[in-house]
Every structure is written in C-alpha cells, then in structure tokens.
Amino acid sequence: MTVEIREVQNHRQLRDFIRFPLSLYKNNRYYVPSLYMDEMNTLRSDKNPAFADAKARYFLAYRDGKIVGRVAGILVPKHELKWGNKYMRFGWLDFVDDPEVSAALIGEVEKWAKELGMNGLHGPLGFTDLDREGMLIDGFDEVATLATLYNYPYYQQHVEALGYTKDVDWLEYEIILSDEHMGQIRKTADLVAKKYNLRLLKGSKRKLLKYAPQLFDVLDEAYRNLYGTVPLSKEQVQSYINNYFGFAIPEMIPIILDENDKVVAFGITFPSFSEALQKSHGDILPFGFIHFLKAMKKNKIADLYLVGVRDEYRGKGLNSMLMVQIYDAFISHGISIVEGNPNLEENINVQTMWKFFENRVRKRRRCFVKHLG
Image 1 (cartoon, rainbow, N blue to C red):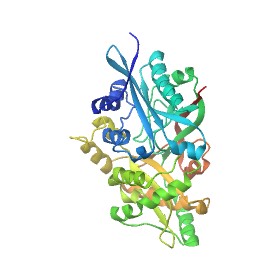
Image 2: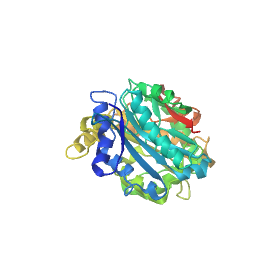
Image 3: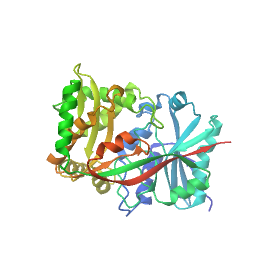
Image 4: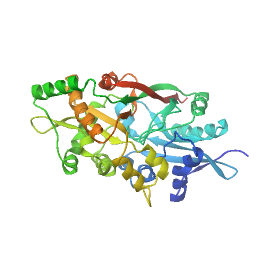
C-alpha cells in the first residue's frame, strides 16, 4: 500500500509521534529515548515559550495502518531576522528504511515551506540550539546521550537522495580523566583568578538558581556566532531553568564571577542519564525516577553540556578555573569518563579545552540543507 501522511491534530497523536522511536529502535543498545515529559513540553504550543513567534507542524507516516515515520516542520522567524536566510527547519525525523516513506515525510515539510515563501529547508534542528540537533553520520556503535539524537546509518543516504547536502558538522568527544596534568592546570587557574580578580561560586542550589539567568546572558554572547543559534526570550530562559536545573548538582556547574558579582564564564555538566533513560523508556513516572536517582548517586560517566565565556575573557585561561571545579566534582562522585556534547568541527576553543587529557572523537553529526526552487 502507498504511504499516507497525517498531520498531528490531538494529544493522542502527539503521544504517538513522541513514542514512535521506541518501536523503531527496540532492542538497539545505542539508542537513548528522549525524556517523554521534556518532549511534550517542547512540542506543545501551550507549553513551549518558543511558540510566541515560532510555528510548527508534525506529520506521521502510515502504511497499512501502522506508523512508519515522523517529522516536524518548524518555522523560527528569529532565524531569518538574525541570519537573513529564509529557511524552514525540519526535526524529529525518524523513519523505517523505505525511500517512499522518507520522501513523503520530507516532501510534506518542503511543501509547507514553499507555501510560506521559504527558499530552503535545513535540519535536523529544533526550536533553539538547546534542542537535539544534527543527524548522526559516524559513531553508530556509541551510546547516545540525553541531549543528542541517535539514528540508523540509512538516514543519511535517504536525505542525500532527496537532494540534501552538508551545511555543517558537529563533533562529539570522549575524555578520560587523569591527574597527570592537574597540577599545571591548578597553577594556571590560581594565576588567572588572581590576575583578573575572579572567583568560583561556592554554595547551594539556591545560589545556583540565583545566578542561572546570567548563565544564559553569557550563553547568548558566547554562542551568538555559532550555526543556527537564535536569541532566547526571558520566558524561554525561565522554562529551561525550571525544566533542568532542578536536577543540577551545584558543584558540577562551575560559575565564575568577577569583582562585581557578574557571571563571566560557566560550565554545565550532569551525570550521564543515558542508562536511566534506556531503562525507564524515557518516563520518570511511575518508577522511572528510581533510575535517575541512581544515575545521580553512582555513575562513572558524565555529560558535558555547555561551556560559555564572555568575549572580554576569551583566551585568558578561564577554562582552567572551570576545569578544576569540574574535575574535582567528577572525581568526588566517582566519574572518570566525560562525554562531550556536539560542538562545531571548527570550534577549536572547546576542543582544546581537554588537550591535557586522553580524548577521542566519538561521533560526527551533520546538519543538511536543500535550497527549494
């Protein structure tokens, strides 16, 4: 039978949209489910502040009454305002190994893009740079993280057959911690702190939440020139704080303050939730939270999500201060392996942060683009 495309119109269909990958990747040891609650909050227009100006449509592909694929089309006006490209985004792309299915799904988004006067389509991307993005093209035998997509190798062949080409690539590193160079790093950190009159925030989760909004100010400044980034509204910032900082372990989120108590640099790391997500199938309730609590208390792997430094302090050694706190926090929690989240292949500043430790590139992922005629 032919492929039928249906647009998501209600809560039940949205639930099916979110749950589809669980069947597609059943028994795949490398796939990590998204957090169901997080997906709902992101995809629902009444939950995600991005919908103040963004638009999105979600499509499901059916064959013989069974779901065989999904895709989201996302219009982010802030992208055109910032970058000048009349591009629509595609995301949440998953499908069985059938060219008819992938063509029908992406074709539906292309059709909508043309209707809105867009001249290009790129992705996989989300509403913001903090959503999962980038199609995996290398590293299929590496376990995914909470913040990254996993997909089968055939995805790349399907989208390329439809006329999509590379726009940018991201790399993901694995870092093995050791104390071999920590003496040198600590000495540098002390010198930097004294030279620029800086200090690391010490304290509770209450203090972390107090400074959290400033972290996003630094993020906006430090990441403004990176691919696909768009400014976040105050409502979006608060939503991210509400959704994620409740899980935070304060010592794993180093924050550097200047003499005026202003945040000038930060890092965000968490214990790895990959195994917890796999065991819970992405559900916190009714009992999934137990796996997350275990991950917080006993884990040998941590995920490095973000590092940001204000322009005026770039290249001045602040990374050494961040690394000292991160290293000490990880060692005290029994963590010896760090999984870096995606950073652009030309982002040398982030890649050299870990030059004193054994490291390797685990994965490469790609954003594809197609110019629509």
